Amino acid sequence: MRTPPTPLPPPTNSNQDQQALLKTQIRQIQASTSLTPKEKAESVQNLMMKQWNDSHKVALKPQESDSETERKRTTYFSEGDNILGCNHYQRSCKLQAKCCGKWYTCRFCHDENESHAIDRYATEAITCMKCETVQPVAQQCANEKCAAVFGRYFCSTCKFFDDDPTKDIYHCDKCKICRIGKKHKCVERSLESDCPICHAYMFTSTTPVMFLPCGHCMHVSCYEEYTLTNYICPLCSKSLGDMELYFASIDELLGREQMPVEYQDVKSLIYCSDCERKSTTSFHFIYHKCQFEDCMSYNTKLLRQFREADTRIASADSEIHVNLTS
Image 1 (tube, one colour):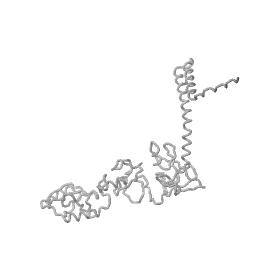
Image 2: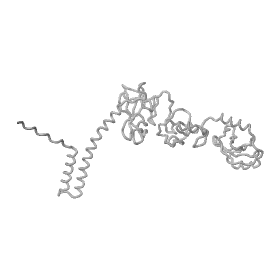
Image 3: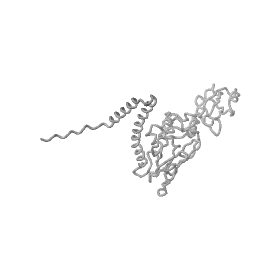
Image 4: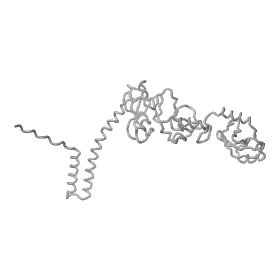
């Protein structure tokens, strides 16, 4: 009769074995008669920290591997057209975030995937997506065999690349950002603020932003909704665009109206939000036109009304007195 085979021992739990070994080592330290209480406490702490450090080093290895894989991964603005970049920009390089050391195609890609915002101005290293060469920030690949141009536009201040041929981009020193277009009234750091309509922070927003003639800015979608019922900037009250046709229609309307007799000698001291000057004009219940010929805006505020005989009141309050006109 055959002897049955000896059963295999149950699998050991390596984690339980490590915990048991740790407990044994701690008991040995506590039982030692040659150590002072302070030395025992330090020995236990060093033992605990050694185990933590060993496990932490093991946990870091796949993260480092993932980071290197991400660095070498090619991303596209349009894969079908073989245009390198991301959803936000066309470019053939990736940035290494100084804050966390991870590789992303642009700052928006970083901020969408991390719990913190990137400091793009601190960026020191980039990698070429064509030859995978890691190098300092520059417009062209440092690998002579590659020599790829990362973007038609490059800003060494903002660490910004864009290879879109349809964009006319330039860096504004006062705004401290790269902008599209050429003409604008610069309001320093205007983008580093909340949108006056939705109150979202615009500098890191992925929603398109537009600059108003006055230099302030807001989201394009907010502008489109706001201008359905308003024509002045919500921050400085200047006109948002060319109001010539609108003001001409008001001229035509007022030309057909006649004020009641009791108001015909009443005048108004007004302040124009567009040219920022005061002037005196005929009183109206709604509309008051700036009396400076280089302005003639209806974007004005009524400061005071008075009888024509008391023109000295207006003169005392106004920086420049303008002759009364009907």
